[in-house]
Length: 330
View 1 (cartoon, rainbow, N blue to C red):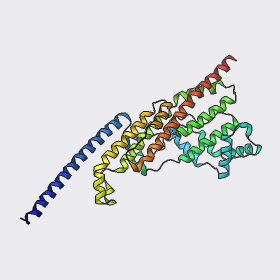
View 2 (cartoon, rainbow, N blue to C red; view 1 turned 180 degrees about the vertical axis):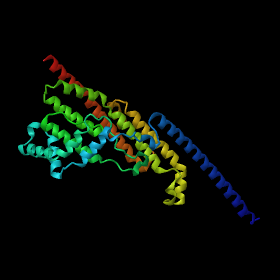
View 3 (cartoon, one colour; view 1 turned 90 degrees about the vertical axis):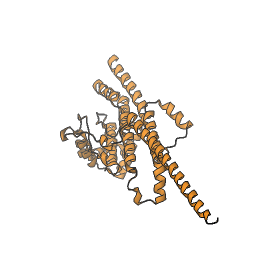
View 4 (cartoon, one colour; view 1 turned 60 degrees about the vertical axis):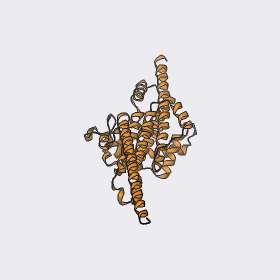
């Protein structure tokens, strides 16, 4: 009789393992089903998860504004002290400028003459392509975005000094939009009797849509995050067997939650800003993936900045219309 006990325990152990395996298999199937549904929703409502779909069509050099933008950015000569001068010029009212600030700003613009010459060559070119290798995901080398943004700030400073027409950049999106709106503010405050310039600015404001750029950017980042995980992929070499088994069960649920979170952010781009502020204050968001929770916070901040730009654009359109009406009616 005692010899039968180990046999029974062995049978019970085998049954328990089989049941555990069956439950695990069912959970995996449920996770895969949820992930498949999340992928279908994302690609139907938000964007593609194939990184190659984000590659922009090629342009001939003579039609590519990015070539001149990059050359202008690389030609910048801005020291730390010059950056402080530029910040003073852009952030202070005209009346508060000291003679030293004005002189230093003018010298900075003059010293960057070669950069402005490069930037001016893209005037009239509507389509830029920095030849970014989207298909490489997070391993792709980005264009010199910081230098490009500093170029936009230098151009805006030149406008404030000279009160002349300025170069517009469509590639920095929200950052450039804020610079653009600030430049329009300066034009309106200057009371220039140049109706053609006001009409051109009015037209450009109505054509620009930062939401499309942000929507594409969010979808592209989701695709890159999704691609970087390489489901069932090379992580096996760097994780233990227990962690691999855990990821095998849990990862589909995490990825499905992540895609749904990105989709929700993109969907919110069409909502009024006040609704988004109230929603974000009243509801706790959870990206469902602890390692990437910070991504959602950054995306929500980007949405807030977009809404601020959209509101500023509407106010700028009205200000230009009032200015045009004043010029036409006297």
